[in-house]
Image (tube, rainbow, N blue to C red; front, side, top):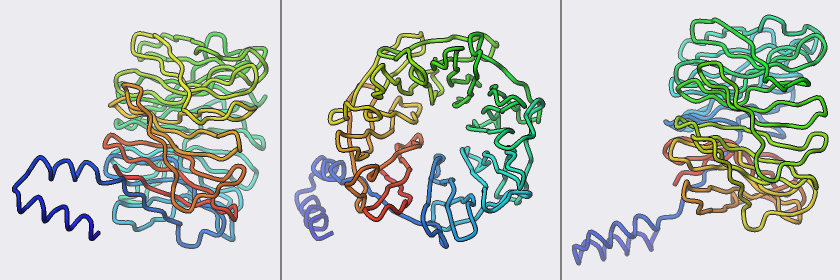
Length: 360
């Protein structure tokens, strides 16, 4: 604080506006850490909107519950009607209107999707036609856009996954990738309504897809994708311009990031310092409309670190203060908004998980 005051005073004395601007630009990002009141082991943020409202879930003595953290730092706890506390309510995505989507498990271990409007406390249950009613089956929303359209997947009575779209009016339809013989997962959706995700072929290899608003599927494999069981391409996010990001798992089970541009050109990338052992590597999770990609990478010691990659390819890495430096400890990033704020969680040296918000 004292250094900033001295710099500000110098700017005033010499009336050097350019110097003031440079000092402002040099201000380091602000990282705010938090725990949901009552959380005993884990606070897991997974989505934030432009105003900085964050949703996710946490664990207390009775089980798992959702939460909404408002920009002023206050919390609202979220429990879907019918949710068994021990199994939990799991928000996945929030839009600019603070409408939240996610899923919850009932006492019979069946999952149901939901929409939640914090402004009036209303819950809307989402069960896609064809979703199974056995343990571990059901409906799993993953993302919502600004128009209220939801995408995700559902598990049928055989356990196979299918993608789905639910429009704001409540109309729901399912989809399967043409080659998704073992399953299709809708993961990300943009404002125009394009959906990205991945599918499993009959050899259980993953492949990315883009589902156009016209209903046309575009399947793709990113550079370096492996061809073994559970390897391949996993597309996770799409921005308004139709740019897709995610990661591949190569033949050695190492993770690498990729970008698919709006005309379908694919390129891969690795964050410097990312490990090269099985399960290590670069894991993009999210992207905003400026093309900034956020995620995390595991180094050779199995420690996780956050990163931001600009549209031009420059990379910034960071660690949340208090993050542990042991195996599977560190910083994990899951969501970025249009102003460049990111959220996720960090694991401390005691193995406890806490939320954070990083503001540029």
